Structures are given as C-alpha cells and as structure tokens.
Length: 371
Ligand SMILES: Cc1cc2nc3c(=O)[nH]c(=O)nc-3n(C[C@H](O)[C@H](O)[C@H](O)COP(=O)(O)OP(=O)(O)OC[C@H]3O[C@@H](n4cnc5c(N)ncnc54)[C@H](O)[C@@H]3O)c2cc1C
Image (cartoon, rainbow, N blue to C red; front, side, top):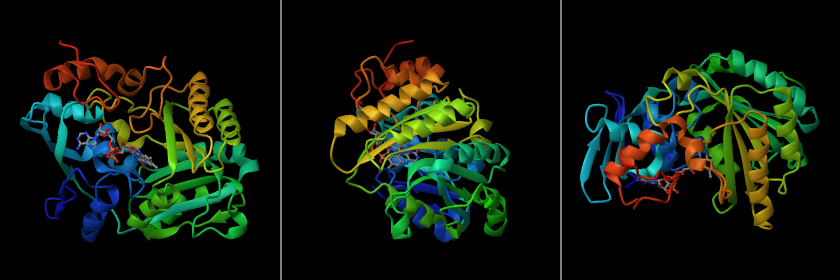
C-alpha cells in the first residue's frame, strides 16, 4: 500500500494509502516534481490529504486536496468506487477536506508541480525576549511575501537536534522556518528579509534539498513522543494576539512545546470555501498550540493545549484544522463544526449516502443526516 507511481511526462502520481510524505517525495523528486504533502517526512498521506494537506508549497501550489485529481475507495458496504470531478463528484468534494468519514481510500491520484530538488530554505532563530518585535516584523514580511514563499514562525525553545550548537539547545527562541518554491537563488533573496529582523541566535538558512526540509520536520517531531496539537485560524496577527502567543508559549509545561503561526494565503485562497469540503480558505494564518512531551504529566500538557486554544479563540481565533484537533476535546466543544464550518450540512448528507451507520467514526466525525 506504499507504492508510488510517477508519470513525469503527464506530471501525475498514483500514491498508495500507506505512504508518508517522504515516500512520495523520494519518488517525485527524481523528476524534480512534488505534490503538496505535510511538512514533515513522517506525516501520513491519507490522513493529512483528506483533512486538507498543509505543507511547504501551499502558497504557491495550494493544499494537498487541491492537487488531488481522483481517488479510488472502498465503501463500508464493500463497494469499489472511483471519485473525481466527473464521477461521483459529491463524494470527491467530500473527501477533499472531510477526512476519513465516507469510505476508505485505496489510491490517491495527484497532480505534480515543478519543485526542487533544491529549494531556498529558511531556518532562523531569534532570542525569545525579542519575540514581540520579531513576530510583529514577521507579520509584515509575511503579508508582503510572494506566493513562492511559505513560512512558519514558532515560539518555543531551540530544539536538541544535530545541527544545533550545544550551547544554544534549550534557549528561549522564536524560529522562522520556510521554503521558496522556485529558483533557489531567487529564493534566498526573497527569504533574506526574514533573516534580518534582528540579530539571530542562529541562522541555518541556505539552499537545501526539498526532501531535507521535510527531514528537519521529522527530527523536530520524532515518533514515540507525545503530541496534542490544536489549531484555530485568524485573519490578522494583532498585538494582543502576539502577546497571548508569547505568554502561552512561556507557560508550557514542557520545554518541547511551542506555539506555531503558519502563514496561509496565496494559492490556498484561490479556491472558494465551498468548492471543496475544506472551508477555511480565507484565513491569513493558522495558529497551532503544539503540546509535545516525552514523559511526565500528560494531563498538564493536554490541558495546556486546550487552554491555548481557548485563549486564542477569545482573541478572534475560529475554526480548526482537521489534522490538529488535539486529543481529548472538552465535552462542550463542537470540533466537527469548527473543522467543517459552513460545509457541515452538505457533508452530513453525503455521509448518509455512503456511511449511514457511521461505521467510519474514528475521525473528526460527521453525523449522517438524510437530505
Ligand atoms: C508531528 C506532526 C506534524 C504534522 N504536520 C502536519 C503538516 O505539516 N501538515 C498537515 O497537513 N498535517 C500535519 N499533521 C497532522 C496530520 O495531518 C494528521 O496527524 C493526520 O491524521 C496524519 O495522517 P496519517 O495518515 O498519518 O494518520 P492516521 O493516524 O493513519 O489516520 C488518521 C485518520 O485519517 C483517516 N484515514 C487514514 N487512512 C485512511 C484511508 N486510507 N482512507 C480513509 N481515511 C483514512 C482515518 O480517519 C484515520 O483515523 C502533523 C501531525 C503531527 C503529529
């Protein structure tokens, strides 16, 4: 189930549902091609794509679902179905953002774009005590950046990874990570302003293999660690929100945790909010409360993620990404409504046609409702 078949002439890949981002990119990068995947090599293709697929080329080429041409599926009744814009179009609409609610995908067919093998890579760490000014400057630069530039700011600590100098590991910091989907030299020029916001603690920015960018993500989020990542979307990064991001990151029970500010816009917003099941097309940023911990107090870390989510919602945060809903939502939270928004009713009707008994319930679950 982890086969990847690339047709470089037509720029199309057939991808099995057992693949992770790395499996796909390893094959497509031979041909200097890529499809939008999650931003770490370990992120699974099926779960991330069906929820949206938010990766390093999102502002140039859109989400994973925007590159999806068709899917093969098995319904809970055991029926084999093919869905595309022309065949079973409702089902194809639903799987593009509606998660694993409708049927089990056995093949993904993706469009491929010219990306890599070398891209402009951004990896700069600024001192944590300058976080407010750095995030405000980041917001300004991100607002003016071309679509080729996709970035993520992360308030937390310098991670303990091989490229980091020992004396910096564990330092309070704001990292700005990013990718330029285009000519690497032009990319380094476009990324340069993000490297000059202040005096960096560390700057690892350089032209780098597109695959390597994803392996940095894998190293930052190794298997075996505990994760509860929550999310909401915001239309602007107000001063109040920046203060809240910093305060919340500083209160994390684990030094491995952080708060992320994912730059959106560009090609994501070129698609209408009801054109696929993924509704949050117009947001400027996705905020992620990333509880990461090796061992210790699970409750405190899970609660910290919930509290951060609440805090940002009080300051204008809305919705949620299906891939980052955290573990153990509070009883009064309507996660389904947050993730699917105005597309919820149409999803409920499609769910009733394909999975009326809700056999596929281990997901951001849609209750079947006959229309
Ligand atoms: C460290 C970390 C980093 C992440 N980074 C990103 C990122 O950069 N971008 C991003 O978009 N997301 C990211 N995510 C979130 C990611 O989208 C979700 O965790 C997603 O569920 C992963 O998909 P999977 O296939 O590995 O998951 P799985 O646990 O295998 O599946 C999750 C769900 O997907 C559905 N599903 C799985 N396979 C199928 C199938 N064949 N057919 C139908 N439904 C299926 C099921 O509902 C299942 O419960 C990250 C998560 C973590 C923990």
